[in-house]
Length: 335
Image (cartoon, rainbow, N blue to C red; front, side, top):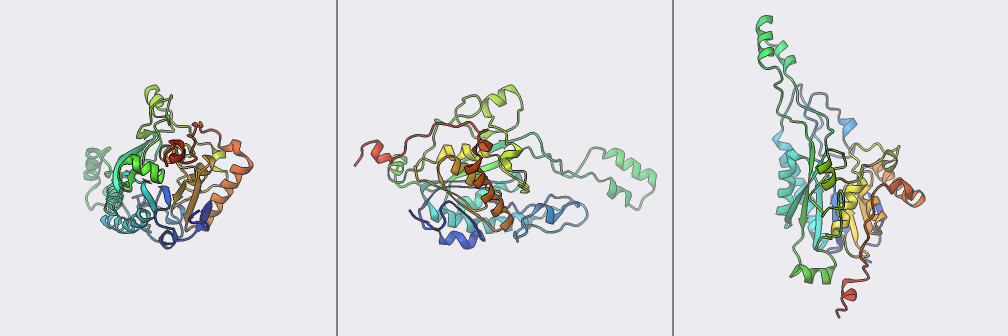
């Protein structure tokens, strides 16, 4: 098997240093949640609390009040273009690239992926109801104005409820990109065993797969159509201090949709606390995880070990029968 020294391992490394060591045309699917280059856009932002200590790309400080920094998107695009070009090289023809983002910088991320040579096939939406509102009021600025108190009160009254332009964010976009196929989709599947989607996968109440999903109970219609199992604390691990742990069901859903080959390899170049690797292993697929944060690597390895020792911790996700995959050619008796 290609990439033997990396298969089914979590590697502590800078992604841009490790990816060039992975063989070309060798990875089936890439599923990742990269750094977004975003701060929390308020003056209470705590860099040490929310960022990967080894992440040189985060904005480390903000002045009092809100700051909108256009350079964030530009730096993110330039950096992610390099990442995407390496991912394009290592994916098999027809291989899928799923990349989480924030609504504000999705366009930069998708553009970088597109410019690296990928075809943007779709955008998934992770819908949720609970999130922190980050908009700021301006009363504290009004107090500092060099005008009398009566004028200040009039301005406060006039601008009551008006805040900085940040609506509560209740969805997360995920780009679904694809490396161009080798001739037709059928030819690509026969030759590389990747490039099409498994519509046997079901979401919600046995519904056809959709590009919207949620792990929150919202209402009967949405739950029936888009609901995936909610992650438990045990699934995440009580020791897991990662700030944005992805639900196992979400990663399983995307892997089931896109991974066919029995010996498929799923790569996450920003593995975080390991959910992509846990999902791949749970589904009987190979994985490669990369992260520059040693603490996250250790958390990932611990969760993978728990999957072996206590598989019940990860059984809240409904299983879907996987197709038999000796090889597609063998199944269809094609020589």
